[in-house]
Image (cartoon, rainbow, N blue to C red):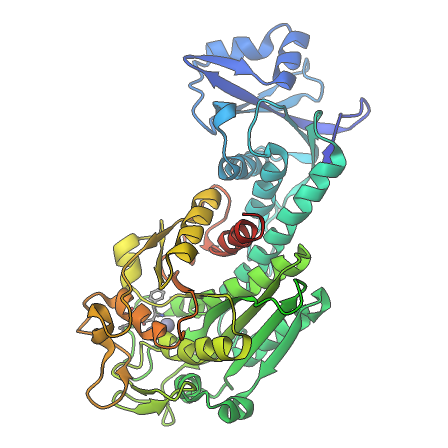
Length: 500
Ligand code: BES
Ligand code: ZN
Ligand code: ZN
């Protein structure tokens, strides 16, 4: 779908459908500027329809009119409620809802959407983002494509802001959408296609965006002492990998912001094997790493003047004669030893080496890791919020703030300093720590406490995205499946720390 921004619609434009907005004004309706003109030119066709249909005008309520008296015969009217209260994410939802309606109506060729200055929070660019995100579908494995594929182009018309400004603002949104879509592609891939080596190869291609990408295989990881990451992957016929993405376009010498992701391409649970129900979902256990890749893509495509590094640990957690076993004691890169109580608590073991490597190598100013780490986080927060755990109030408040702005909200849960309360849950009787706590109590916090032992006082936040990475139902701005949750959040967080 091609989206263009225009300051006026040419008289000879061949629109097949126009989209206008309706505003709610206490118990009555106001028409947007373009809807008002349309109403006047059609002898009150719109106001009469509103009256006859007892239109309620809730946010996103819509109806369409087909009539010869309309300039292009078809028009879609969408209610936005109070336009002065619109937020960025509501505008995105508006875009998503318009996309769904146009598809349902079978609209072809050109669509014109009219936005006026009553609407808040960059309606044109955020509606465009919503249209784009809702268009995404992971359909590459269907041999017969959906016949109703999108067949329209969109002109978004806004008179009072120059086309160039809108195009420039949208370029940032488009870069973010590209990051989200790349992340969704990775998350949606089955694990026979996306395994550590094939994943690393896909990421390596991103050098064309100006990122510096290093791929470490098992030999190099052994030399680095990554015994924890390697232990998780040792049961798989597929070689484990660690991939590092650098974007150093900020001030020379400034410490980078680091993003670290869990990339378990398939999690069988290992010898602490998972039940077969829902097992296929474990292809998306690399969701954290995909969000890191998506975020690095957005940063590069936005050409942001910042220093950032992304580190992902890619493994498969399998059952085989070579797999790690409950009771094993392994050496991590940090020098700390780990007793494996449960081979299904593997994500934290992979991240232990990734976090340690990142803080040792880059001395980052902050480190944010994302991981589909615990089933318990979805029991606590469902699919509405991700859990955050942090050793730093400023960093977690920035993420909470960013989450509110983009509607990818996070909720802070406990994480104690080393040696205190919950941290003691990870003490082992045979090694420096074990990889599970007290029989499932505070399971998500225990996982965070484990990770914290590898961050070495760097301001750090762990985001547990196990409940939000996949959503069968879909949303106003996404079809069902991988959500790419986190790319928007991290883009906004980067904006907040860059611009205050
Ligand atoms: N990958 C899972 C967590 C998960 C569950 C992600 C559901 C997405 C959806 C993780 O590796 C895991 O199995 N965690 C265990 C930890 C337990 C053994 C301490 C869990 O949460 O049950
Ligand atoms: Zn697991
Ligand atoms: Zn896992």
